[in-house]
Length: 85
Image (cartoon, rainbow, N blue to C red):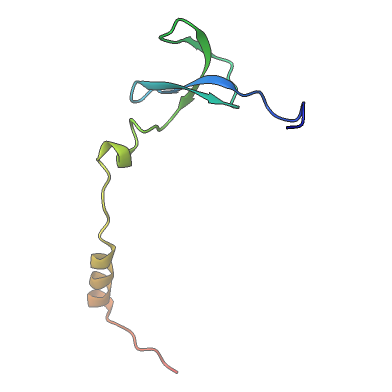
């Protein structure tokens, strides 16, 4: 790798305040705020809006849309149009 052109890569804590969930990983993201982690060290912390702890897909609260039913209801309501050539 070329020296001096890559951002610093180090440990960062990502915290989902809504779910009370945080994890330590490595990233090039930077932050002004810091937090003391479970191991006693201080790391930069980045607050995120959604993580795997609060995302509906991962928590099992996702809703499945019935798109086929919507199309059928539209066709019943407005009828099916014929294509003119």
